[in-house]
Length: 289
Image 1 (tube, rainbow, N blue to C red):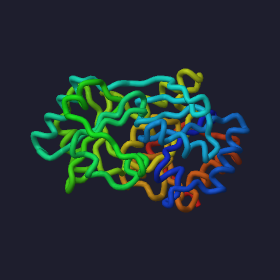
Image 2 (cartoon, helix red, strand yellow):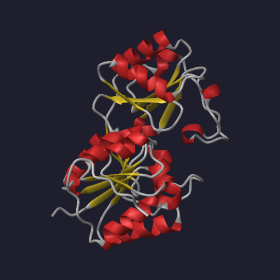
Image 3 (tube, rainbow, N blue to C red):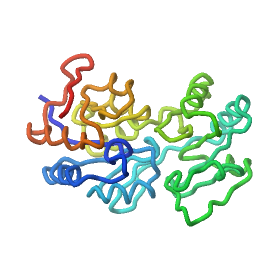
Image 4 (cartoon, one colour):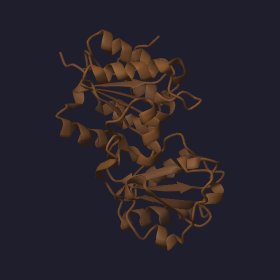
């Protein structure tokens, strides 16, 4: 019987409650898991500089996967472990194809493992306060489109007012621009990485370095960008507040993030000795309480 040797958790809508805090119960159980020798890896669409303080507040100071799988990062050491880049050619083709349909779309190139944020002129006015985890007291500099697209990106962001992220994803999926991988995470924009880059691919790369098999991983998530992750892991757990399609694809469904669903399920794993991990059948689902 395979035992769980690593826990991977999404951040927004999963680790965090709706008020963007980590509950004491969640913090305590993640500490217990780590003390038992089970690493807890935060995995998010967020960039490393934005993810780090949130993860550390939850007591997580080891490896993390950022930018929807494009970046591996060690929280305690502040070290980039790996980075997968979206090529200039692919991101330019994506931007041009999307703008042909949505002429007012604007983009951002996120670079240097999330340390550099380069918005196209006209993008900053679309942002809400604190959008992208950006500091609200520091104005963002905008750039000419040619400069935004001139270098490879960790992640390319595309956004148009009045157009939902779901609509943008539908178009990107239809376009199927070579060299690109598009997803959404609950934010009001499209997120584009290099082809094949997902949370699952990033975690797989991290686990390979740790000598951990996919069947030894329990993963938690709630949104579209978690689908590949939950399918890849030995046991994929959807949050009670997750999208219907995420719950349908998961092996198990726990309570909501506001009901400490992550803690509920991890407590169960710890009490059962961190097992079993293998799927007993096609998409079994249980409701945590």
